[in-house]
Length: 308
Image (tube, rainbow, N blue to C red):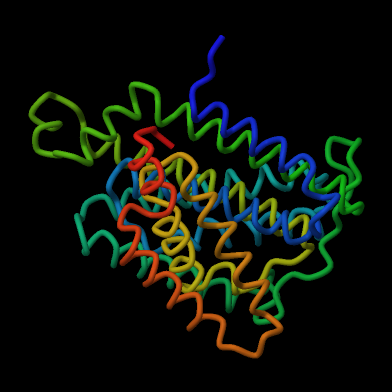
C-alpha cells in the first residue's frame, strides 16, 4: 500500500518526536508541543473559517489558570484538572463567540481583543489568580494514576500524546463535512448563506472548537510547567500565535506546528544572546512573509504540488 506524502511525513515526524527527548531538552520540546497545539487550534479559526481573532490568549491562559487552581487548591488529579481547564475554555469560547461573530473583518478581530483584555484585567484583580505572581508550585501528580509528570521524560510523552490527539481531532474536523462548509463560508459567505447554511452557527461552532483545543494546550502547559501567569493571557500571547500560524502557513495541517517550533526555538536560542528577542523574531517573521507568502509549509507544499 502506497502512503500519501502527508501520511509519510507525519510518520517521519512522529518517529523523530518519539526519539527527540533523548537528544533535546524535554522542557523545550514540551513547550513547543503545547504552542504547536495552540497554533493549530487558532489555525482552525483563521485558516479554515477565515476569522482572525486577537483574543485567543484568553482561552489559552484562562484554561491555564483554571487547571492550575483545580490541581493546587482543589486537589484534582492531572487529567481532571486539564479537563476542567479545557471545559472552562469551551464555555468562555461560547460566550465570547456569541458576541464576536455578530461582527465581521476587523470589527470581529477588535471585538475578540477587547473581550480578551477584559478577561486579562479580571485575572489581574481576581484573588484566586495570585495577581502578578500567578499560580506557582502547581502539583503535577500522576496522569491517570500511572504517568509521573514529575519525571521529564514521562511528562514529555504525556504531552506528546495530548498534542497528537489534539492534532488528530483537528485533522478530522477539517476533513469532515463540517470542515468543508467552513471552507465554503471562508471563501464566499454570501454564497454559503444562499445555499441554506446557517453561517453564524458554523462560525460559532468553529470558534468554540478552536477555543476548546487552545484551552487544552494552555491547561497542559500550566500543569507540566507548574505555573500559570498573566503572560498566558496578555494580548502579546495572542499576537504570538498569529505569528506562528502565519510563519508556518495558514490553512495547512502542518504549518502551525512548524511555525510554533521555529518561534519557540528562536526564542530559546536568542534568550542568552543579549539581542532584543521580539525585534529579532519580528524581523525573521517579516522576511519569511516577504519570501514565503504562503508560509514555510504552504510554500513548500505549493512547489512540490502536495497538500501539507
